[in-house]
Image (cartoon, rainbow, N blue to C red; front, top):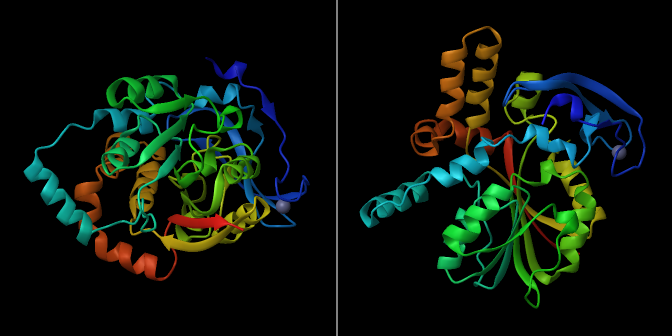
Amino acid sequence: MNFDKVILKKTKCIICNKRKHVKLFDAKYLFFDLEGKYNIVKCVNCGLIRTDPLPTISTMKYYYPKNYSPYIDTQAKKTSSQFKKNIKNILHFFFDTKGQAIPNLQSGNMLDIGCASGHYLHEMKKKGWNVFGIETSKDAVTYARKKFNLRVFNGPIEKAKKPKCTYLDLIVGWMTAEHLHNPILAFKKLRAWSTKSTYLVLSIPNADSFEFNLFKNNWFALQVPTHVHHFTPKTIKKVLDISGWKVEKIIHQRTIANIIASIGNILKSYGFIKIGTSLINYTSNPLKFNYLFYPISLIQAFFRQSGRITIWARKK
Ligand SMILES: [Zn+2]
């Protein structure tokens, strides 16, 4: 698919239903250096930050090429020996980024929205969960079905039907909500599949962090236009509230991966392609990376300035 096939539409705020905004800055899709220039705008009424204009849902696929790393990364994982797994678990305990922190629940029915190749669901299945997934990438879904024998709906959440279980106990979305054209409709749909005790757990980039203000168009977690909204703790709370969910906890993740990768983006823009790319790739090796910078990550999280947050919400 070429850029000339991308259909762009002017946006309005999904909270206020109004177009009035202030422009913060403009940005390009640095992740793959693809065509298109987008504005990062903020609703003057509620403060929700969004990408404008926006490709329609069907033409957004130009920005999800075959080598889109969330699909590649999850496919590349090798099976480790039990000894290596034990060491990993110990390190994970001491250097937990809290990136996928979930409440302490008894296993039941769970759904992963944007489950990619299904590795997370596979791990949860092994722990006794009855698992379901939703994923737009056809290749990732084929992998999840063949490799792990998972029940994954291939398509956007807007078209998904209720998983075949009585109700869901846990819904997770790891770095998914910012990709949704209308998260309010999605969260309302998920609410209808839930009970009072269901937890909705999301991880998202945090636009109320010093790294967003510092790096602006070079911020690694900006990724326009695939990131439709750039939430802050305040605006995600509002979006969830309108959708019938009450935020119970916001966890600031213990990682500075965005900062290192943003520096990589800047270096690339000055022509230092090799070193810039290696910094960006370095962050995708969470083992080495997170342990080395863990003390800085702890300070950043303590001051509630982390560029990535994890949210626990329950039905109102
Ligand atoms: Zn608004």
